[in-house]
Image 1 (cartoon, one colour):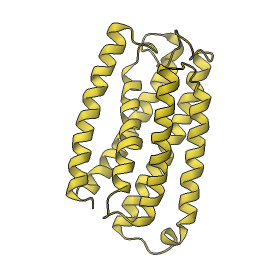
Image 2 (cartoon, rainbow, N blue to C red; image 1 turned 30 degrees about the horizontal axis):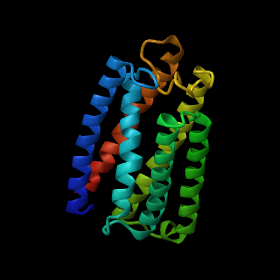
Image 3 (cartoon, rainbow, N blue to C red; image 1 turned 120 degrees about the horizontal axis):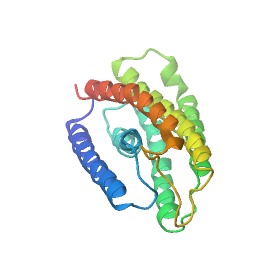
Image 4 (cartoon, rainbow, N blue to C red; image 1 turned 135 degrees about the horizontal axis):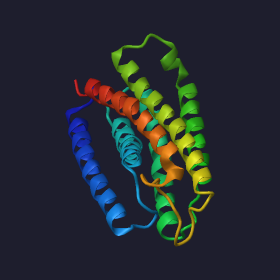
Amino acid sequence: MLTSTTRVMLVVALLVCASVAVAFRRRQNAQGGRGGRISGPKLAWLLYAVFLWFIVCPLVALDASVPMEARVVLGAFAVSMWLRGAAELYMLYVSRNWRPPYGVGHDLGCIALVGAGLAYTGEKWAGVLDGRDVWALALVGLVLVSLGVEVAYAALFHQAVEGRTTGEDGVWFADAEQERFRRINRLTLAFNVPLYGALAAWLVMGMR
C-alpha cells in the first residue's frame, strides 16, 4: 500500500529511533540525566509514541498512494505534534517549566483535531471502503487510541510526582525502582503489548 520510498524511510527511521532509545536509556540511568531514570516499559512507550506520532504519521501523510482524506487528517495531526515537540523540548531543557497538564491539554486538542478531520472528510468514510481505506482509517484509529492512553499516563504520572516536574530537580520519567511508579509501569507494560502488536500488524499490511 505504501510506496517503496516510504517503506524504506519507515524501516530506517525505526532502526534509528530504536538505537537512540537504547542510548538515551543508558545515559539517563547510568549518568543521572536530567529528568531522572526511566524504566523499560516507559522507554518502550516513548519509542512507540515518537515513532508513531512524529515519523509514521507525517510520512504516511506525504505518501501519494494513501487516500487524500486520510493524508489531510494525519498531516494536520503531524504538524500539531511537531509543534508540540519543539515547545516541550524547550520547556523541559531550557525554561524548565513543563507540566503534564500541558501535554494532556494538547493530547485532548489533538483528539478533537483528528475527530474534526474525520467529520470534515466524513463523506469518504461513510461510503464503501476498500482495503486501502480501511488500512488508512486503522492508522487514524491507532493514533486516537494512543492519545487516550497518553492522557491516562500523564495524569497518573502528574499525581505520582505531585506536580514536581519543573526546575533543576524536575522528574519527567518513571523509574523502575521507585514504589510510586510501580502501578504506572505495570499499566504501561500491559498496554505496550497490544499497542505494539497493532502497529506491527498495520506496518506489515502497509508493506505489501
